[in-house]
Image (cartoon, rainbow, N blue to C red):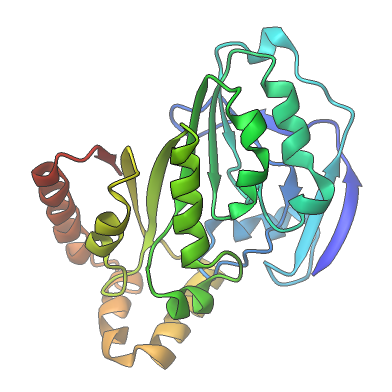
Length: 260
């Protein structure tokens, strides 16, 4: 992993995501190195020639949040990197940002895969309007290791339980749903005791990530390759159209809160 400290003016930017005013990305790059990562396009703008998942820029700044720009706003940590990636243990950028946020009335959403978030329970419990989104798209850790580097399935399940135990609201993001490989029902059955809400995102593949994913499916799951080719090369939406209706019926039957 190539790690570099860079000087920046600020760590927040205006959001183009519905319902989110600002995003906070304290790092550029991500050690999770997810095969499917939509944020890998950041490589084109960061000046890095290295493969996505092999570099990390650590943002250094003296920028301080101001009450007039923070109060009542909704923030997302993080939209293009995991704010609790393994290097956060050393640099504590996320923790230092939280130390500022606890002084304001903000709506904060933290999305992560990593158990390091538990380190900051003392701060998280001081934020009045907080939601934590834990991403999980399989219970098979062997499959997980093929598509993501960091954070085992067991560690994510334990993180969910510990966050809820400490009174925090947790949403499980079943994402991305790999056709024929992600068993969303098993994930729900394993987590519904703790989780307040579910988010579902279908696997989207673009450029480099499409090539990697299709090669992986062809090598490891050749019986599904033609189905993936229909979806991602011929833009056939039938599979996900049917799956969305199935998910809606299943969640409604169980009385679960969910969104796509």
